[in-house]
Image 1 (cartoon, rainbow, N blue to C red):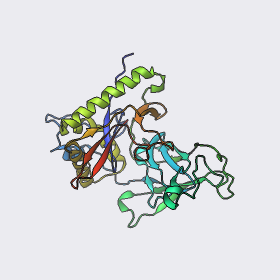
Image 2 (cartoon, rainbow, N blue to C red):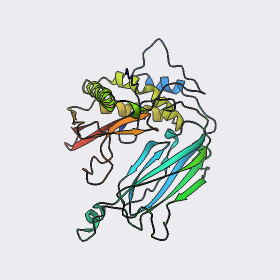
Image 3 (cartoon, helix red, strand yellow):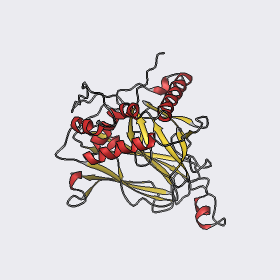
Image 4 (cartoon, one colour):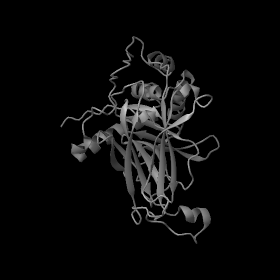
Length: 331
């Protein structure tokens, strides 16, 4: 089988992320073909001119409250948040980047036990939690901000849907004793854009895993080579189309676009990058099998510094000489 993988990218808060998504826009067609090549020097202006502007900017958020568990959040089977801490998130999770078009959306929560979290916080007298407890549970609220450009000055959060696990208030969680528990629910969203995204992709789970792993491995190595050669313009062109889709869905300002590409530029130009082995990573699928990635395990018992993180990363020394890691999350 001749398998062609097309990658484009998006930067998140602390890591770079590339996603295999088609470039076709069903509404809001964006023609980026020009005589001049896209470079780090003109990419912000080029993106700003290509992106559609929406007078009304609906944004969807998740407020998550957990008890005796850690968790991962997926929207439409695409990961939007990992939270392996006992603390509760103070700010809601923006999820528009995983909403491709108006209609029914699916939220999935993957719950994991605490492991040694309480021991690290309060001492060895606390129990090691290898499974979920009867008191484990999740509450999730889907919120909508009608016009993001007015938030939070004059725009409030409006409840779209609330969901909680069975037994949340009675300590009778049905996943008691399990090392992992997953649940899903749906809600309806209305957004002003329509992205093809991974919607028309093939199911990669049906491909010979040896072939698929080799293709992804080769791409990772190519991406590593670009970073080692500090070829920022190649990085820009690889990530351009998907960056448009994701920043458009989040209604980013021109200044925020500039910040995005500046972060790419800084990361690419880090000196003495030491890329780490991909061998201890696992092949995972998202988007109903239409997205594949290498990542580190999400389960307890793995190195907490790597837990749930993308497989491709490098170590480097910051300006203070401290060893740091930068993850390049390629999907």
